[in-house]
Image (cartoon, rainbow, N blue to C red):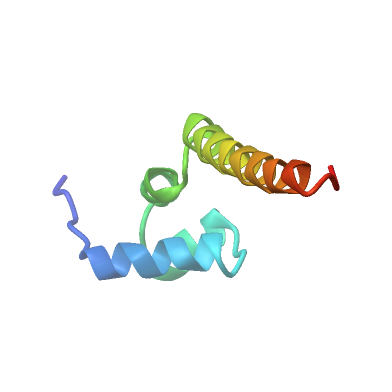
Length: 81
């Protein structure tokens, strides 16, 4: 049994059909002639993990806190806050 190699562009388009266009993995896999298992692996490789997503949200929240603190400090000096 030989291992089929797919170009990065082919993989990207397959993943795009699942992630961006919302097609089911089995449907895309059948249409493109790849195994569902391979397509699931490609999708998983580009999707952020739960930890990465939470980390990005934490950085964004901390940035917002700093912005609001700075804004409030400016208001305190003008007695608005």
